[in-house]
Image (cartoon, rainbow, N blue to C red; front, side, top):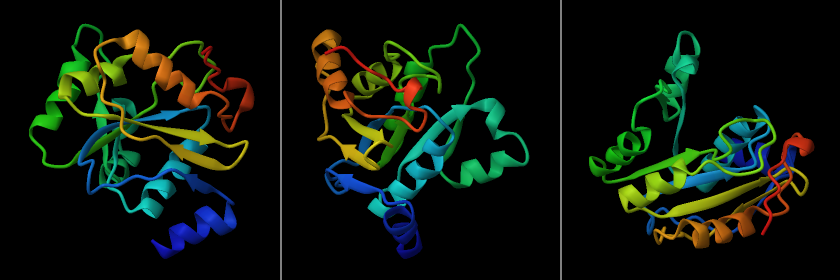
Length: 184
């Protein structure tokens, strides 16, 4: 962790605003926004290492082929078959049932390009699994990760999305023009 902290803070100049207690939150959906570049991946890996928190991630199954696949799985990655007609929300939510500790990062934008609204799969995964959403803003403008307190989905998606959008407001991605700019 010492090398990761040195790279994260001293070399790259990032800081953390907020706290993530793995002692109290053993299961969670981590919503990471904005997702504008491949740089988000290694900065996120550094963040979880500095925090000392075990957090996995999902990616399209095409990423998990040789030679990258074994490395991504070793790092906590799981492949997702995005073939239409599957209930991906239920499939991912079911993973929480069989684990004592499981946190998964999802980029709710669903792409690294500009979007006007977040996809809601992350919300419904958390709701179905009965776990909180922890929001993490990747603000490249301030070189800061903002970490929210756990938000347990109420089932009122409009009200909860207002809270979620408020949290991400102003976060600037690595590619600023692709940043998610929610209307709150």
